[in-house]
Image (tube, rainbow, N blue to C red):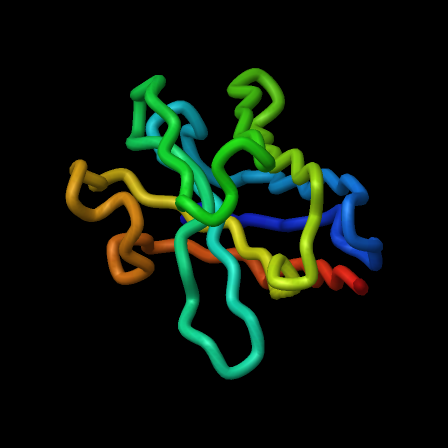
Amino acid sequence: QVQLVESGGGLAQTGDSLRVSCAASGGTFSRYAVNWFRQAPGKEREFVAGTRQSASHIFYADSVKGRFTFSRDNAKGMVYLQMNSLKPEDTALYYCAASQTLILSTVSRPSAYHYWGQGTQVTVSS
C-alpha cells in the first residue's frame, strides 16, 4: 500500500512560479511510476506530467510543455513538479498518483493508477 501526500500549492499570479511536491511512503518507491494529474472545477481529471515505472522519458501534457518540469528523487521518495510561467488556466487541484503497471498507452489515464494523494490546490490569478 502506497501513501502519497502532496504539498506546495498556493496562490500565484500570472507569470509566477510554484513547485508542488509529492511524498511517497509504504512501498518500494523505485518500482512505482508516481505522476502528476490535475482537476479544475467542472472538468475531468487530466494528466500533467510523469513517466512509466523505471523509465526515464518524461511525458508532458501539451498545455504545460516548456513551462512545467517533472522530477523525481528516488532516495527521498519524492516527486516534484516545478511550474513556471503560470497561467489562470493552470488553476486546479493537483494530485500525484502511483502505479506499477503503466504501459505507453495508459500513462495519461487516471484509471491506470492505483494510489492517489489528497491533492494540493494551485490558484493562479490574472
